[in-house]
Image (cartoon, rainbow, N blue to C red; front, side, top):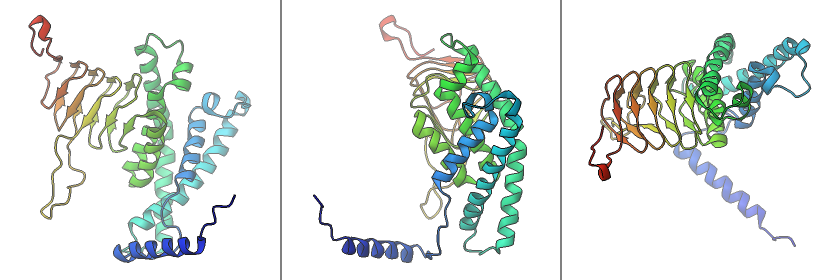
Length: 301
């Protein structure tokens, strides 16, 4: 049975709501001006196939056509990326109203730099895969790690997103990161700097903030938060953007499940943070922090 909607009235109401918002925010309706999450998701799938063709590429792929597939797939992915970069750069510079040739050249330059970084991104991801394989006794093979582990999927997205972020495409980067967040429950801001051999075990509920700095061979377990302790504000009361406010983890740090580390604190090389700890101060190299074990009469280590 038809719901008998007054579609004309609803369309008029939505039109009025859009007009009110655009007027309040000084926006023009000049056609689509923002990147498409659907296009970006398809592009990321293409990039994953190009990075790991015999594992994440099409099931019918054979090794003798591997390079052809990679080249063809990269060509399509970079063309899509350039179109989305033009949209983001145009939106970001809408007040300056940059000429179209200048926008196109900037987008082409960014895409070239991103494409040239892909071999190094692959090498970084190899260290993440090996860290998971070596760090989890339940892992039967590196192939299992690459195909199944949510932490590895999150890092594939992060390595790509971080490069886009560094190249001045923060919106595209955030969309790439949020695709992984929705699939894995792991929330890594694309601005976070993460060294080689990073391993997130289990993964669900992990949060890593924008200005976090993570060294090499660091391991996190599920529900770990690397967050901000407070949010600085500008003179007008608005939140200050981009200031360092998240933790620094030096090399070989391990943080166990449920721990929360807040603020611009430094966790020194080789330190171990126990499960469910709430931490807002520095920890020296080689140090350890754990919950108080009151039943045994022990305080915090």
